[in-house]
Length: 154
View (cartoon, rainbow, N blue to C red):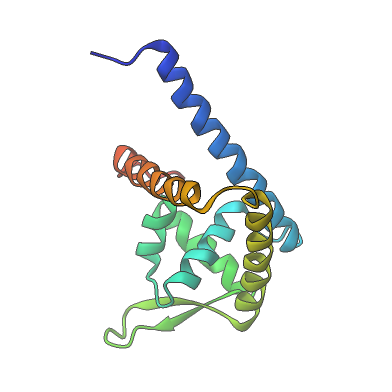
């Protein structure tokens, strides 16, 4: 049968804390971008940096955003000279996304700050506990993706 009310409240409390941590990190990254970027745009830069040559469709999937939203966002990032649309190597009709030089520089600045924050936050956390937290966080992210799959936000 269903979980107890106490367990459901505990689960919700954990998700709230994870959300608060995410927002706090996003706010710090936004500060580094001099408030030019939204939290979603910052995540987009991260995804493009991790997978250069990413399609807009794949970016939308990674961001859980609609194709229209992603297209407009990429237009803005391109105007800000942070992202470049380049021709696909095999399909001339398709464009793929890469960070521009300015986008790479900004992303590196944000990444360096995130590494500093992580080092300070986890300074007293034993390596074994970090490993467990990493595995559990990945499991939570994967499960959340499955539970919400197909529900695009704006």
